[in-house]
Structures are given as C-alpha cells and as structure tokens.
Image 1 (cartoon, rainbow, N blue to C red):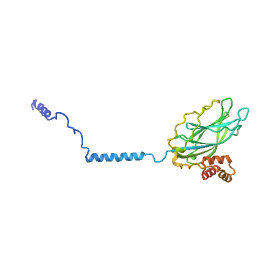
Image 2: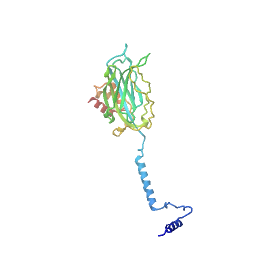
Image 3: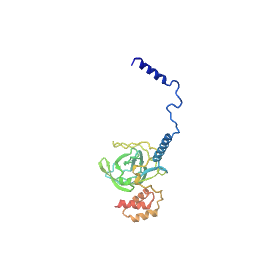
Length: 281
C-alpha cells in the first residue's frame, strides 16, 4: 500500500460530508407519532393521579382545640401579711391566657375558669403559673408547674386531676392545682379564642415562661392525634334545669366543677355525664 492511499480515502470522506445549513427537521421527530402520543397520555394520567393524591379534602379546615378548666388550688403557704389574691396564668404554645383574680383567696383560691385555646401541632404540654396580685408592686410569682397533656385527653376523654406545684418550698412541694382537660377537633372558623398577651413578672428569680406574638390561627393544621377524635358538636345553652339534673346524679361532685365540665362539653348533657362518670371512677 502506498502512502498516497490514506490521503485518497480522507479526500473521499470529505466529499461525502454535507455542507451548508442544517435542515429544519434535523434531530427532531414527528410529534404526531404514536409513541409520543402514548407517552403524553401516560404523563398526563400520572400528573392527574398525583394531583388527586395530594389534593386536600373538601370542607373547611379543621383545628385542634384544648379546653382547660382551672378549678381551684390548695397552697401550702400564704406569702405576705394579708391573704393573697391569686390568679393563674396559662401558656399553650405561644399564647398566654389568664383567669380572674380570687380576692383574698389565700391558700385555697377558687377560679372555676374554663379556657378554650388552640392546640398547635407538636404541642403536648401546658405551663401554669400562680401569681399574687399586688396593688403597688409587681405581682409576685407563688407557684408554677409544667403539665404534659395525658394521652387519654388527646384520644377524646375528659380528664380531671390534681397536679403538684413548684415554688419556694421546693419542686412539687408548693401545693396542688385542680384541672379538668378535654380535647376536640372542629372547623377553624369556630375556634377563635383570642389569647391574653402579657409580660410575666420575674420577682422570685424564677425564669418565667416566655411570651411570643400570637400566630394567625385561621388555617392551622389539626393536631396529629385528631384522627382519633370526633368533631365537637355546636355550642348548646347551659340551663339551670339541666345543671340541677346532673347535680342530682352526682351529689358528691362540687357544683362548680359540674358546671365547668358542662361548659367544657359545650352544653352537651350526655357528654358531660360520661365525663363525670370517668372522673368519679
């Protein structure tokens, strides 16, 4: 083979190369082919399936709600020269609520205050502080506690118990507070319970619970436990006749506690009776 033969082959290949502008259909396929049409239909069906799987259920958004009845407390010591005027400050998530003051309540204050609050996702505990209201000085922090919401409450049961209080006397040694807890899930439009935003006192050197701006609650997601809880019925008026009938059925339970449980159950007599039966067991 002579040296000129490779050069001749190269010249032959160059002559076969297409020179000039590329045709408009270069590297393109006909969009009307059966293959592309089938691929398009499959992609469209997959998109519709995914959209249907992630589409939220119809109807108004649901909101988890916690009802806390702050009934009374038994404290071990009266701080000051006169009888204390105690009130309770409750924090649930980023929102803070307060009871009314019990004038001269001393060591046995009673509030019987029902607080309806929103339960944000991931929140499973509440914080309480008891203050002595003072006229000319900062309110004095008497006792405090951190309570984990019982699983029975998140499952829809009404739970009543006495919880130990921390304070100057030591952890769990400052007394006890009586609470009734219940939980429900309902439309967000019905769950508008504005919190009371306050600045806590730190007179005892105790790190008081922080205060944050209350977030918007209209579209809050339901609590993870909501699938076990039926939606709460609408509010029913509480009548004296209804209250008297329940009192006759439970003579050993304080009248104010019965009224608080009835209000926590939104006036539902049957639900109140079931709750009281659970409390008396």
